[in-house]
Image 1 (cartoon, one colour):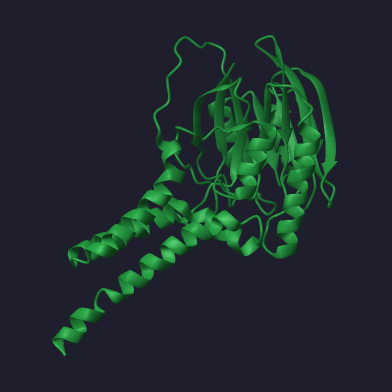
Image 2: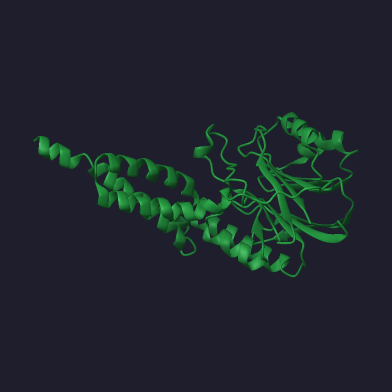
Length: 315
């Protein structure tokens, strides 16, 4: 009986090891089926769980399974590693470009939290998503600092509003994708170069139909934004993590890089979980290689189910 019990003890850890590696690999086929893509979003969680499972298998002296566990750990570490690789600091930059992205959540009536954060950080450009008329009204107090406003507010989750301290050469509300929800394009001069910035918020992939809507909008964003010369910035709640194959395809198609690289995973959603280990990064700032990223970080809670993303750049 004791021998049987000892034989069965490793079994749950072995099953867990197989499942975690399976889910780690399954996300690679996310372009073919939306449920496969869902498994791509949890690389940090797979990494930590495999670490714990492999440690337990080592304590049980199941060395073959330890090797399998280490394979799974390495597999996820390859995806996570670039986000923690050290970056080269740039000295003497007295004129950085600071961007703030905040999905404010349609049901959020506590505008003071975000207003305080904006006044504290003083970003050059503020992008609000899921913003309605109440957010336009709330930001009136900051209009002396942000005289340039591109409004596309809505009472549903697809409102889009942009505030800028920097004069705009061009601003346009564009309707991309099958649902025609508003995205915002602006052009402005920074360090004697014309920068194009596009703010977009695709449909959440909560079903096969939702995933198709999101992917169609990403395709429309690519087609629309490709002709614009560098430097370019794509910013928004993209409703996918950096490990989605659709994210990789978007980066490749537009020749962009993730501003998170070198600064950590920085999960931004959902705030219903207080620990960042239960959150995932779906709010993004993607830039062309012309830009050097000085800093990327997550802001404090603002009453939304998302945390704000603050990015500092230079050319």
